[in-house]
Length: 436
Image (cartoon, rainbow, N blue to C red; front, side, top):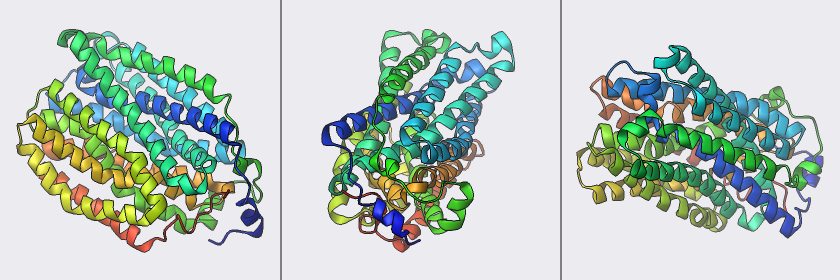
C-alpha cells in the first residue's frame, strides 16, 4: 500500500536527540528483558510446579497439562496485541509499554502466591490459567509496542542492529530465567524445588516489573508518533488498507516462532523426556545455547543493515527446512552433553536469522498511524497458532507414539514461511519507518 503524502512527509521527521534516544531505548530494552523473564519463568520451572497444579497422571500428562496452560497464555496474546496496539497507536508507544508491564507484574505475583490443587482444589489451575491470560495480554501488547518503539527510535543505518538488540533482551530474559533455575537447583534440594522453590522466580519477576514500571514512565515518546498524521488507527483500517502487509507478517512469523519455541522452550523438556538427560544437564545445555543465541542477535541484525532483511530471512528458511529433522533426530539419540549443546546451538544459530530481524521487518511494513497494531496483531495471531502450541503439539505426538511427526510438522511450517520470504520485498529498501 503506497503511503499518503502526509505520511510520506511524516517519514522524514527527525528522531530524538542522541542522549535521550539512547536512554529511552535502554529503558525500553530493560523492560523487554523483565517481561521476557516473567513470561519464560513459567516454561523454565514447569518441570517443578506441574505436579502442584496437575497432580494426576504420569510425568508426560502433567507436562502436557502445564503446556496447555502455556498455550492459553499465547491465545491471550492476540487480545493484548489488539488492545495495546490500538492504545499504542492512539495514545502512545510509551503508554502501551507502561500498561503492559503492569499486567505482567500482576500475573507473576498471582502465580507466585497461588496455592496448589491439594489446598484449594480446581481453583488452583483456574487461577493459574487466569494469571497466564494476564501475562498473555501483557506479552501480546509488549511485543508490538516495544518493537515499534525501538524501531522508530533507531537511526536508519543501524535499525537492523537495534532489532538484534531488541531480541537479545528478550533472550536475556529467558536466559535469566534459566540462570535462576540453575542457581536454585544448586542451592535447594529437589524436594524443596517442587514444594516451594519454584515460587521464588515469580516473586522476583513481579518485583522487577515494578522497577521497570518506574523506568518506563520516564521514557520519551518517539518523534514518529508525536508527528503522526492521518486517520486514527482502527482494526478495520488495518484490514482494509494493509491486508497484504498483515498476511505477510503472519506468514513470515509462523515458521520462525515455531522454530524459536521448539529450540528455546520445548527443547528443555525434549532433552529430559526423550533424550534421557537429567534435569540439571538439560538446564545447562539449554542455558549455554541460549547464551550464544543472545550474543549473535546484534551481529546478524547489523549484517541485515548491509545485505538486507530478506537475505537473512531466506537463510533461516532454507537452513531451517533442511536441518530440522536431522538435528532433532540426532538430539533424540545422543547421550553426550557436549554433543547435545552443539546441536541445540546450531539450531539456534539458524533461528537467529529469523529472530534478529523480525521485529524491524514488521515495523518497516506499516505507516506510523497503524504501526503498533500492524506489528502486534498479525504477529500475535501467528505466534498463538504456531509458537504457543509448539510444546503441546510435540508432547501430544509423543504421547501418541509418533514423536517424529513433530519434526515433519516443524519442517513443513518453516517451508511455508520460506515461500513468504521468497515473495516479499526487502523492507530495508522499502521501509515506511520515519527516516533520519
